[in-house]
Length: 193
Image (cartoon, rainbow, N blue to C red; front, top):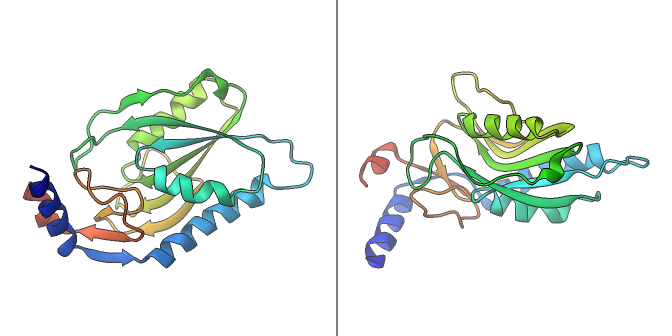
């Protein structure tokens, strides 16, 4: 069974197109860090934001970004998804909810991708309903769709085409989160499960 998974994963990548290499990905992370540092690393700034990584996709982005932030912060995570092992969005499922410590705080939400926006819209609303003073959304990638989204990211690392992308935390059927660059999977390969 594991051989089948490895063969399937390799076949998906063999037919994929690299759209951003590792250097471009790291430059995008630095850009996000610079924007957050510009806002929060200021003399006299008393803000002590709570940074929430959205697991599991944001784990690579979060791990790369946190060491570049130069201001005091608290870190925690939430786990929410609309995809599971599928390639189509479904209902939002909360696996780890925000802790009550969000009340009265500036919350920085880190996520791998702003796709259709349904998940991040619900995350932002839940945090505001729990009493967050402000919710700042920072995403590694914002997918260019030809329609409006229910939420807008405050900080974006890369704008990506409307393709199914893997790498740097993003996966297809659980494969390839570990790639240092971004690859677009062909639509016809997604149909061959």
